[in-house]
Amino acid sequence: MTLPIGTTLVAKITGHDSANDTARRFGVHATDLGLMWADAAGRTFVLFGDTYGQGWCGDGAGPREGSDWRCNFLAVSTDRDLDNGLRFDSVITGPSGQARQVLDRDPRIDEETVIPCSGVAIGDTHYLHYMSVRAWGSKGRWRTNYSGIAVSTDGGETWDKSESARWINRAEHDHPFQLGAFALGEDYLYLLGTPNGRWGSASLARVAKDDVLDRRAYDYWNGAGWYPRDEFRAVPVMQGNVAELSVIYSVHFGCWLALHLDEALGAIVLRSAKTLTGPWSEGRAVATSRDYPGLYGGFFHPASAHGPVIYFTMSLWQSYNVYLMRAELS
Image (cartoon, rainbow, N blue to C red; front, side):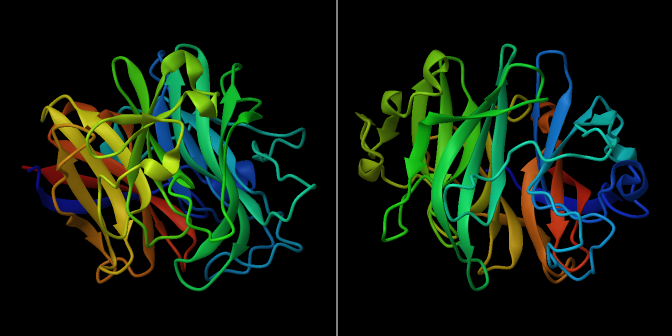
């Protein structure tokens, strides 16, 4: 078992008075999430959720009217000195020079927003797992229309939401793959999925790297082996309140690491496993709401794979911005 032995807040990376001064430079006064992945050139892509501009009123995600609201935005970084914060080289911008939305809403359906969940680069192609949010509910609960995978072949400038890679939610709102976390293996791309909201367990799927955009090509772990096509045959590999999951293989420790929010515990927790099918260790807190009220998220920086220290992004609800965190592991 890999254990956290100390966590520190490194820097605020979005909003006013942040390491990137995103309010002045890119029109980003408030945002959340900050999931990350690396490409072959060593660039780190950082994708954020609901984003607000100058009209943001403070204290969490506010009204959209008059606040320059965008569903998401994408930054790129080559920063290696993470102990001084995560610096952005650039942001995907619109004609005004402000950060622009990279995944748009679908006007044909009831859709509140489009929220990114996980990203990965395979060769020169980038894949992004996202969820189509139909309606927000009470704390930690919401309903999705579907989850899907978008693809970019121009370095994240433009994205296509592939209709062949969508997992439609049921009327019972219990589909097990509505929020996803990619994990890149030697032969397959793996997808760990959870239901909509923050109160479900994580199940596991895999697909050949050439078939990422074909939902019919996915196999699902049923506890004894891989079962084709039927995601409802999947058996959870990670039990509990698994939310906003991030997974990485640690070369240093020789095992898989997972970060996720445990809403009941009020903490971002760390788990480890020799294989993605488990068994996974129990979650050990790396950051708690006692120290960081309103925390959520918890997404690995790719550099976390190579040493005894992990770096991850953490969102705080009240300030509605994103922070870089550092945790030492034993």
